[in-house]
Image 1 (cartoon, rainbow, N blue to C red):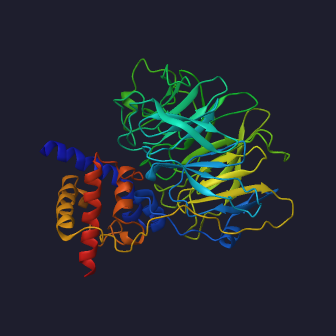
Image 2 (tube, rainbow, N blue to C red):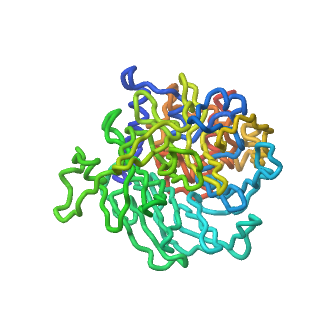
Length: 502
């Protein structure tokens, strides 16, 4: 047990080290507290107003940007249906939302609702041959979906099961290829390590019925975004480089992903041997394939979408990439959507498409995914403020906007433990305290530090905090807690906070 506790302690320290460097290193390494809190705990920002969005965000020439929906919680990946509805995953609540198309043209979805629920941390979503596919953290499921009416029917069935989702990078991204296969990415369990599960740090593929699951490409630390170039049908994927090698190394990557390809991790960063694992590179390792394009280090590229319906000149061979933004840099960077333009010689030029999410320490949002509707409208999801932004060609007309309906949220911060009698509260708090000590949480969350856990009631209640523990934001590790244990941990933390306030 002592050895196990020592291992857990080391893992916690390793996961917390980037945060400590950010906040306790030299002054040049200081970052905004909002960035760190979002990276570590998933704390979000306030819902932005339409006016603030217009004032703070900049969009490329030829386009205009509006706030389409907000108050959606920790949303992630999207799918635009042929009817103009937007489906978006919400991993922490186990749901897929549907935002009905803006038929009345008031600048917001006509309705927001829950399409699927009771899922295990759903992330990637796509549609193929009448089926809506959802990549949960440990499985892939599908259900019959009418893309015109935006309704599901029948029973949700998991066609791929047993996927690993422990440790970091538990999200799975799913995209349907024109070859009739579905492609599935699975990130690494760690910052840098040799994986025991060969499916981690890879891209896999399988047939629509879930059969013939196989590993397609390896050495991909966290290849969250996948899409095909429409002019060549080549598969490209974003990849997040490792941390703790300084502000500017290694770069994050865009890779041309091919069958059997090996992309270096954990032994090689682009073309440079890793200082920790480079000497462990197997002698029979496949050739390391170099990135098609480098993003700045720690910019965290996530969703990628090749534009297929844009009519603007200059965007014929282009892809949009959401940069979630850095946490492991002394000066934060990223926090924008960039456009990649393929040149006649095959080179790629990167420039800003939507910028301004981080200005003078004011963090408005963290872009996650980009999708394009059939009419050329572009949508951008933001898991920091729970918003979706809409980008349209600039026709010189001012768009109208009314604040959209939002999904009903729990009343976080008000009477967080009112539902527990004294005996139940004491029992759960005692169990939570034991867990807190077992996983040595105090090593990272010491009182009077910037990592101190406080003001939880402003963001959560007991149920929503327990849900957070099932899918924590890296670098916080996901501990193997049962539902009861997650509830106990939440009650303990609120109990401590309430006692401290009195």
